[in-house]
Length: 176
Image (cartoon, rainbow, N blue to C red; front, side, top):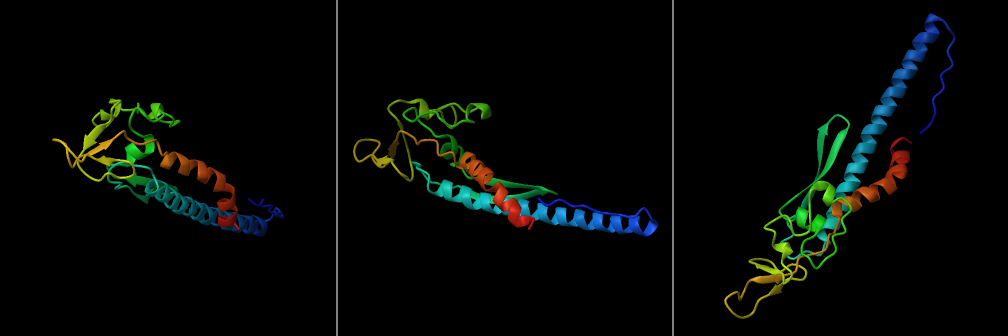
């Protein structure tokens, strides 16, 4: 960010000029901050959407990502849908429990949803087989989908890391 220096003669006119310059500087900061928040949120929506849509997931990936203006100088990137937590943190005991924020947020592998992810032989459900689900062909469960779950995709976690990498570039652009 550029530095602002104001040289002022200590006269009434000089102080008035300094006040005008400071108000202009404040408006520049407010415009740049608003532009930066918007740019970060829009980039966040784009990155998170792509990450969720490309996730390995057995079932219907119903995730949609949008931005929400919460209050002045607060914008959130929000993911909604029944599959959000399953995609973000993963399911099933066959996949590593490697999401760095899972336990901080109270998630343990197989401990949410219907806790079916704890079953070492997998589980079955009705619906879309998604990425790796196998439709059962025979027996009383024919037509249902067998799954072992899915790995943690870390869509939102990865989005935050990517935005951290792009922050300086976006700030330079917004405050140019």
